[in-house]
Length: 602
Image (cartoon, rainbow, N blue to C red; front, side, top):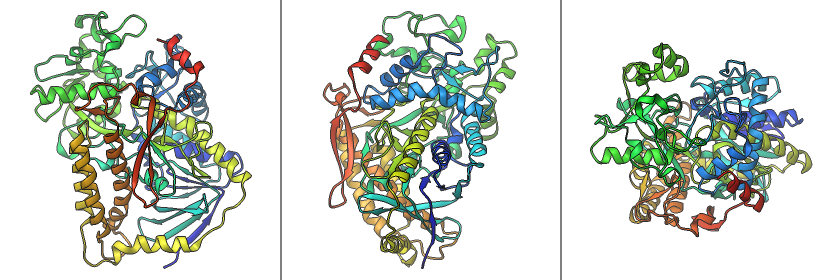
């Protein structure tokens, strides 16, 4: 059939916050850059990140610093984080926020004109720089406006089918444009994966349609390793009603601004099970307003702002025990602040404009007067492509990763707000080192036979006149992952999931979407299936091998933490026969110096 060939030094796959920041950095260092995005520019999933970006700037509480942020990140990740990545993130995040501001980002301000910061789950001090509840949108707007002047080449609405290799080195990618079905080959000296997460492997998710695990699976097939894929974050608060919007994110910013969680009896249930960290410490009374908190004076916070895994499990418990809302969630109430704040309606609309319009338009609920119904939704994968902390390069030469598809920073559970600063910090590092690699190691050789083989693979579903429906296969996969590999996991169900995924692979081999390459969404789904199946099996096998409960990974047959497993990460790779296999390796980057910081911070 043939294809159009593009040449560049650095190819960035993904145009969210991480991909754009990487592209800007690589271009600024003299590399020719092509950015390939699965959807239209400006439609990246980053725009749905609402609450803010975590950075220890100390504008609201001057006791905050990088050591506190580092320790909070490690504690939230249950110390399975790549320690060096957590250190770099905490140290560099303030500069990245100030840099974004210098490029035109308009943050909310303190009374004296500095960037305002809000409370968020798991953070000791108010740390999230924000733009109302539209922070991700402002990040994308700013990066696009800045990047458009860098001479970057964009290929929009283009899906990558496979990565290309020159021996043990990455040499580019082969894909097609989703509208016309025309093939494109991008020949590059370095490739940066910035494709986001895997949420579309589950039935209920806050993730948009693009999140089919493309970067994870493409890198895995190219010889890279994945790390900690068992840790999938279920955000505590997604919409549960009406069914058409089930899973859409309700930002943690609602709770950061004073929202409280109530069961059907009107009880603020989050006080019923306080983690050991706060056990025995005093609580202030409800009459004292939203400062009804747990903890000592140094670390007091509303219980709704404990780590996401804990809050999600508490909500599930209330629902299972019959104290849920009418549509299978609980109530999130921000309207109650009218008892304490003058002009509360205006205050809520100013602080949470997107949430106000989201519930008003989609659910017919005025959040300034009535509570929202919310429940857990698949939101984020802590696991990703295993990379070097300093350079963001994988074990495959010339293949880099950043953002959600890069693993290591978040450990067993990501703190809210760390994702946006993650995009900036590690997007910059990936762009810097990819440009340097491309410059220092010369051009790669283009193997057109590889491209021809990929083209044949990609066209197979169209050429089949009969076969399995790709939509049905994806639907069945989502049911398997939601029901057997969800919030509460057990040995037998995880084994069952692995077996059923193998059966779906056989069906995917027969998936058919006959017709034209133009405007053929069934074809897109048939090809996306392979990525979804790979990441789903990686999650299920990794979860089966971690026989303990830690962070976002909850095993109801192994409820306690295992001391030995608390010192290892799960690594996923392909065996020589192409099958998915997992093993445990020691946690990366821990040093005596960093360990002493954690102890110093308590």
